[in-house]
Length: 148
Image 1 (tube, rainbow, N blue to C red):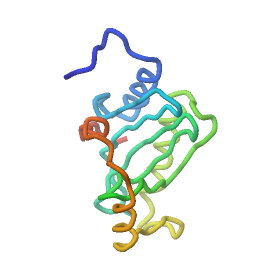
Image 2 (image 1 turned 60 degrees about the vertical axis):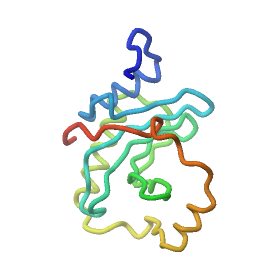
Image 3 (image 1 turned 90 degrees about the vertical axis):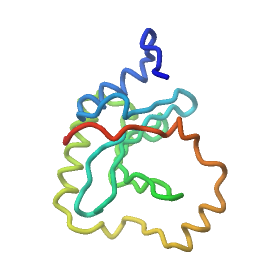
């Protein structure tokens, strides 16, 4: 079911405007108002230093925006770049930061040393210690949009 476009929250408008600036269809984004409020934008890009991994933009009213690897089977998102302040910058500022980070990552050939590595053992432990995963409707998204 498509959301009612008659009333769009200011947070939804903010996230959709960033998605559009990143050339991502609004349907590939998600947001939820609360304490903290959160948002997500699925990016179709991949970078050479993380072959085969898709990227995502994530936001929290507590921690600002970050660029991360899409999680794989029970892992937490691996944050590649973060911009905690200001927590809710103008959409053009967010898009500019993401483009710059993606450009920098495009020139790396392997993950930076600071990127955490998840062993199969720790992954198994983290999966068994987590509660129920988010519902598929909350995290479902399309893979659309073009290059940044």
